[in-house]
Image 1 (tube, helix red, strand yellow):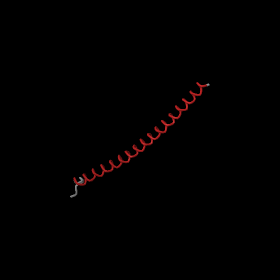
Image 2 (spheres, rainbow, N blue to C red):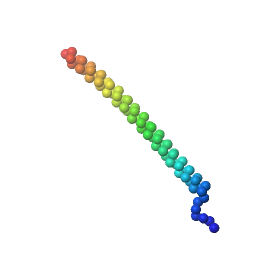
Image 3 (cartoon, rainbow, N blue to C red):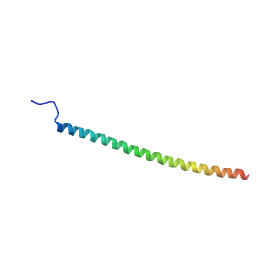
Image 4 (cartoon, rainbow, N blue to C red):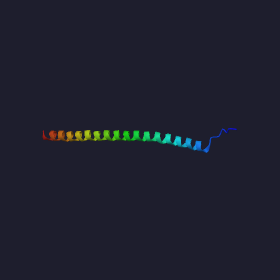
Length: 68
């Protein structure tokens, strides 16, 4: 007579497989988040450079305005 219950070894293997799949999925998500963070940091750096150039240009224009 065959039991419908799975053996403890099969249950443990199944749990390990599910855990492996979860870790794999989370690893992919983590890598995507790291890439997104790097993109945001690059954009922030570029924006800071733009603001710095604009501030410098404003200073130049203010100097020119005061001279006249």
